[in-house]
Length: 297
Image (cartoon, rainbow, N blue to C red; front, side, top):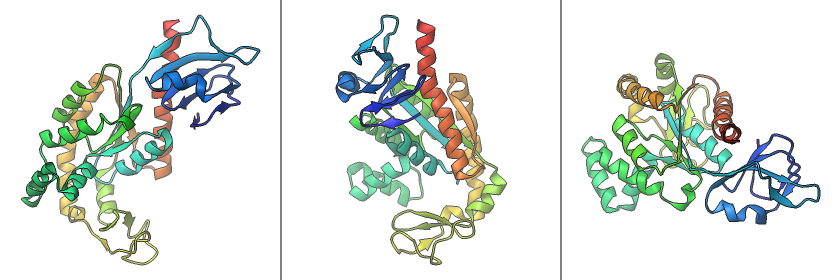
């Protein structure tokens, strides 16, 4: 599996690659130039069974079809400290799709002092949380941007069934939701999170024991002070897990009924979790495209 932004060369049998958001199932492709796919890239099409004849000219064999497809909507669930942001970034780099964090969107609105941001700031300053209507509005507006035309990764959203239903109702026909739930052991996570330290300037995260900074209490990237988040105190962490379990159980049941739920062991090493997610997505995104073609033939 490879992702390229330049001509595809030397493709072996059975490979499936992504080219500007276009997935191509190959049997005997030796070379594909940009011009061959450009007319399909703008309309986000799956191109199945493209092959080269002996003379090197590109053609579509009669027994293959070009099938329309929607976006890959990847949703990352997980309790406090599960590594949702880390894994969302890994997916972003691999698939070249936006990583959209509801928390980042809210913070951006507050910093920019937009009317919505001022409203959110007043709520947060009063000890409250932004309501579903505000979060839904931000997310739905963001995923309409052009950079989301091939798909996107959602982190921190949806947080409840109401948000999940709103998202589902606003996705165009053909979009494929893939829900990845990073499962963790709450007791072990309490021990892990109470040693977490965060840079107050750039947001980099450290662990006092497992992943300390080069200089105690100072960020390696921007030299600003590291702080303990108010929600990383042990009693607060336990309460967060209690709330999360109640909400996530309903989300899990909803997404299981929809047939889009996938559990990943989030207690493994970061690299192992990343590998397991990639294998899952390869199967869900790439292999399902091939299976769809085979079933239609």
